[in-house]
Amino acid sequence: MNALDFANQLKGKFGDLLSGPTEFRGEVCLTVVDAGKVAEVCAFAKQELGFNLLVDLSSVDNYGEDPRWTLVYELYGITHAAHLRLKANVSEEKSELPTVSGVWRTADWHEREIYDMMGIRFQGHPDLRRILMWEGYPYFPLRKDFPLAGRPTELPEIAFTKTAPIEGGPFVTAPGGRDAIEREPRVRTTEN
Amino acid sequence: MSEVQEIQIGDSSAQAAAAGKALSRPDGEELQDMQGEKMVLNMGPSHPSTHGVLRIILELDGEVISKAVPDIGYLHRGDEKIAENMTWTQFIPYTDRLDYLAPLANNVAYALAVEKLLGIHDKLPPRCQYIRVICAELARISSHLLGVGCFAMDVGAMTVFLLTFTEREKVYNLCESLTGARFTTSYTRIGGVSRDTPPGWCESVRNFLNEVVVSIAEVETMLTRNRIWVDRTRDVGVISKETAIDYGLTGPNLRGSGVEYDLRKAHPYLCYKDLQFDVPVGSVGDCYDRYLVRMEEMRQSVRLVHQCLDKIPGGYENQAKEPVNVADGKIVLPPKNRVMTSMEELIHQFMLVTQGMNCPAGEVYFGHENPKGELGFYINSRGGGAPYRLKIRSPSFVNLSILPHLLPGHLMSDTVAILGSFDFVMGECDR
Image (cartoon, rainbow over the protein chains, first blue to last red):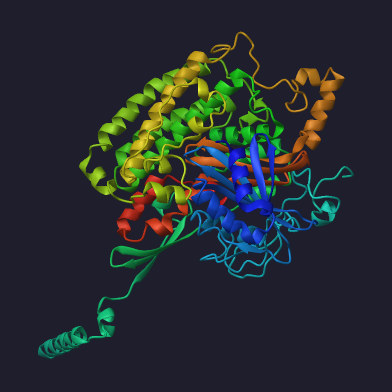
């Protein structure tokens, strides 16, 4: 059985809850329409379809679009060697979806990282704290509206709280649309 | 004198009376007091066995760990954010700084991920594929040499460390003559490698392989049946198959638990399908098994590099002028002499340097069997010269996430052995 068969099996079980499958470079991708059901889909994929390894869990900030967040789950089954990608969209107002740390325990740290970097919360997560940034840091640095240079914070105990001192820099492009220059004033444009 | 004695006697008798009273209490409230308080020990971020800047807050009951809370992020540099703001090629030097003990393997992993997005990952010239496999396997040998050496030193075997570091130095000399740098290699390019092998390089790799097997055997005789080593590592930090998969472990740490999962076998990339090698697995999943797996992987890597050198298209010195880059001017920089004389190449050079190559919109995930485990890149592209989102799935980050589950119940001194057997790198964990 290949990934496409598994995707169709999932679709057979959940019906309209899943859209797709789409295929790109040999990778099969399904989108969970209702992000609130993502844990159920994942639990089924693990228990019934043998996707026992959650390889990766990442998030994308579709800045300026609605829904703003896309969660990306990379599923893999060691016994059948099939790889399947699940995606779920979450709006900025909600910024919350159920945790899958009850399905795969490796999701615990991945979800903490997403919360830390993008500020998406996970319902039912056992310990949703910052993981890479320090406790009390006020921003979510991987959001597209957070400037590359950083923002000053007012935490006296932290050593480096000023913006980065690199002027100009090697940074040539800012993918993110026309407002990139306002968000990122140091980015090199065709004019300068 | 007599006064002091009186006080001591009185005091201890009072204590004994209190203790007796506490023991007879049915609710056991005072009994808990007698067991003493738990001690919180702050291990790291600067501790010899934390291999960088890992901090673990340990709660100890006597010498036994009752709770472990890892604290990571001391080396967070925002690589994923940086990647969104530069061209595909400009990010290659940043991959050197992920797992800085195996930069060549990171370079290969990143290049393959972008090539998958471009759809050229299976159209690479054969010589390029063989060079990349040699690079990745040399990186594996060097990383495992360090891993085993530091592991041994952490639990008290200094000689092994000196031996493995001597061998590792030779790998760095090979890196230097191949790439110009010992650590920050930045060797691959999207669609190929930055330069072909220098004259005499393949010969020196062959010499190195013959030397390193001697050292590996020597390390083996010093450790594998060493009573102290076995006592410190056997049945310590046991991870079952199911737990290992559940926590997403990859690489030698997963295979040490007996799961036969190696990306080079499961989804062969480059020329791995043409090469013969075995995947060693452990049986118990303890620190000793993880050590054995690393030792055998080094031997298998030596075997792989030998085969690559035998089969490398174009031979050692590439007299046949086999290409090492894909023949696509929109992906690979043209040769400098053509840039100055030909209009088309000048345009290609200009576009590639200022805007980067034009990648199609789409998303891919590529996982590479790095020395530490599966190094994966999830790339979300919306077209153009830079990624919209680049997620680095680092093996060390995922491997360390098992610590809160694994450490409780072990002795404090076992922590050192367990951390050593995990062979993690914080540069990659924190990104």
